[in-house]
Length: 315
Image 1 (cartoon, rainbow, N blue to C red):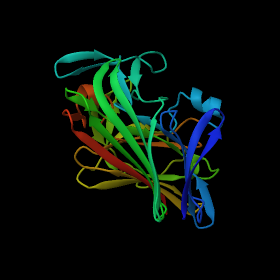
Image 2: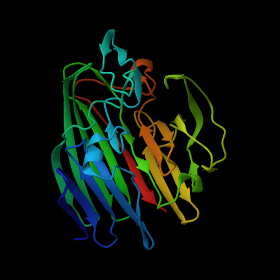
Image 3: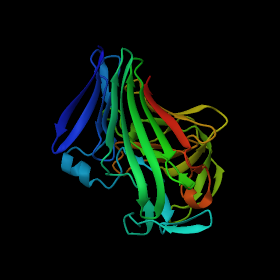
């Protein structure tokens, strides 16, 4: 068959590899470290591009504090002081951001995910993982979180999440993915980015939203001497929106497509790290601090579930 799935060791970590033999397209998944994708390689013409920047050694990956490729659930980004109010009750999350000021990036990071399923077909292969949240500190709800990674014969890589409320009370949920993307050995200053948004979230000094304002920038815009650490509101009147990272020198465009619309990925964080060798492009289902503001927040009744998909391809 054109696809295969196999296991390999990365130091003490066990990885699962989905690979297409004819193209070399592959993704490498680490269930026991938050279910992250450690590598994603896709081909355009004769070049196989390694698209994710993650720590290079097993130890560095375990100790990583920059959330490289991490799954952010049941909340993403910051909650100030780790405090939120939901249905009239106040909750206190662990303040795990550097400096112990805020709670950040959810409760499934670095956790050991359960291997649920693998499947190999003629036109795709997939791996499904899960993690159960139950009575976590500051989040006393029961949620079954599932992520499915799939590689397809049309060159696409898909990430699909699902959250199901398995408890007896309503619960707030938000999901985000935190990949750092790279294109060959070029620095980000050589790239252009097309951000599918006309509105940017305004932050206070603590990087907490205090409003929004129009976002005026050339589309696509050259990243040379531009720095982003911003959240954007995407057009939720469409079914899908696409962020494009463009290298004209290499004649390649990385397309990150996120489902939009009710309950889907209607927000987007863009971050350019100081090293300028990658760009974080992070689809979110809700605004930063949505547990307090309610902006985009999904509330699941007992027994209900919600899902969404992010698709990656090269053109």
